[in-house]
Length: 393
Ligand SMILES: [Zn+2]
Image 1 (cartoon, rainbow, N blue to C red):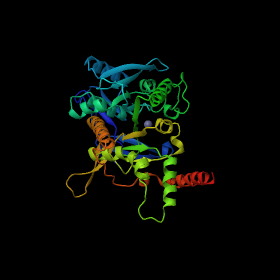
Image 2: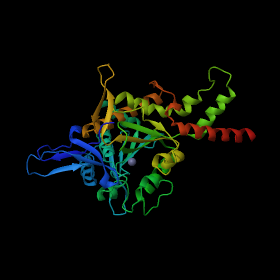
Image 3: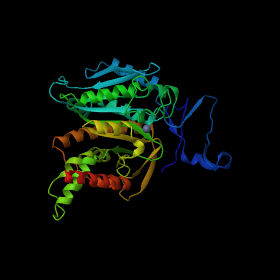
Image 4: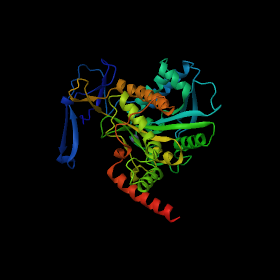
């Protein structure tokens, strides 16, 4: 991958820039237990202050000012509510973007988005910024999206952690993205409130949550990619049908299409719209270390598709348009994170059209190739067990 490059901002240049990789040096230091040390060269051109950061910042205050500004634009389709206060009494905002007048009259399709449960992952806020700015824009596709979906957005799940400058934890030192199974109302109020809200919508016959995505940033992998869930029941059914019809060349039921390939639509559609989206890193897993995350917990509780969107802190690899297969590594800048937000919204519109049967999604690879090898093994084991139990009964 591209080198992990810090960002810099000076008075002369008022936006964050990446320090060029040729000015960055990584080496192992015997004085620090052989750990990696980063050093970089930078020329100070004046005595004006210069700021350096691990990634492009996005603070709680910045978000509050922006939300105030959005409110002042007086959009009829934009609402900002206080969902709950954090332990240190900061706002957890709930944004609703809905362009149809008949909210909850009939069955309203909803998209639920959250970000910044991990406070250090500021790139996710820039993507969320791009998403919201696109959704409130005059763009034809944004107007259509507002008509077909009601968006419920929590742009910052961990404002205390963001304010305090924590990398991964809340005020009380908890990783809130491992608390979804049993959140405490007083220690993890945002998770408690969002989980209740999502469950409430799921139980409301007039609201249909179609997709829930939690936005994160990744420190080790380049590009942007989605993590999804694996339904053991769906995979078991697939194995069962394959077993029953093993002598037939063509599989008689479109079980795979129905139960698993719809999960691939969003990754596929996003990969078609954004050069930084990687199908290679897209994965559907049941990893033990991810238990208690928003995606896994809500994926088990809700009937909708649940994903984690990851975007690199640093850079993305992509093949250039010359057609000769040359791969480039481009550092992420703020505009590119925001552009990813816009591409994500456009992929949602295409997903809607695919759901309505007016667009076909051509999948490049079958679902099973998105499962890590160990997940395939353990799923087969679980599926066999389930099939045996069903057969015995
Ligand atoms: Zn994260």
